[in-house]
Every structure is written in structure tokens, then in C-alpha cells.
Image (cartoon, rainbow, N blue to C red; front, top):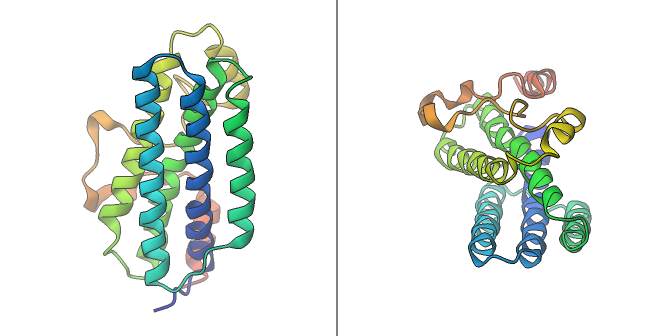
Length: 201
């Protein structure tokens, strides 16, 4: 079965390759840290990203979606560059930008769910929910590490992420059940999502 939803196909291809970039980045991040507990925490997040990449590939294979060579190359280079930079940009920035990245990744999985729903497909809700929630857990972890940093207020003002600014509306303390989770991220690229779904109806 092929998906008649170009935006969903593109999002799956991009997510598959972007997860590799994130995993590469976390390899460098972990290597730049000194405390074993910190290294272990980042290694676990890296492992989660490889797992997400495998999950996305399963979906792509189910719908005969090819891996994008362009995205694979692009995100391979991005991931390697970020990985190397973690050794020279200090302690704060790897945590900050990882948290900002994960904040956006949360909604990408819930947007995938909305795209599938537009095609009448709900069988992937649980795995997409799990990945979205896991990305939220990553975001919360990274913010926790830098919440008391003197640099956070300045970076939050410039980059729109931090204690009071998020790219998603997921609350781990009051999670919606899977069957209601399409309520998440209604304002995330709302016009883009609405337009993409209109094209397939």
C-alpha cells in the first residue's frame, strides 16, 4: 500500500534521517562529558534515537517509502558536525540545543499521527504516541540539567525555548491517553498541517 499523502511521506523520510543526526550528536555529547552518570544518561537517549529510527523505517517499509539519499547525506553531515562541536562549545550549549531540538521533535510524531488519521489509518497511533512522549522526556531531561544556569534566560529569549517557552503542549504530569493524543500540537505548523490534509481528502 502506498500513501497518498506527500507531506506524510516527506516527514517520515526526514524523521528517519534526522534521528541518525540526533544519535550522532549524542555520541559526541556523551564523549564530551566527565561524569559517568551523565555519560550514561546521554547514551540512553542516543539508544532511544536509534530505536526511533528503526520504528520509522518499519513504517516506511510498510508503505513502500524509499529512504531519501539526500536526507541521509544531509543529516549524516549535520550529526557529525554537531558531535564534534560538543567538544569545543562548552557544557551549556549541547544541553540547551538538544532540549530545543527535542521540543520540536515531540510534535513531529503527533503531526504524523494527524496525517495518518487524514487517510483513515489509526493502527500506528500507539507507536507514534510512544515516540512523541519519549521525545518529551528527553526535552524535560535536558532542561533539568540547565535550569539553574545563568545563561538560560538569555538563550531562551533569543531561541524561544526554555523554562517558559516550548515547541509543544505535552505535559508529562497530565498525559492524554493514546486515543485522545491527536489533541496535542494543534497549533504546531497548523496551517501547513491543515493544507497538507486537505489535499488528500
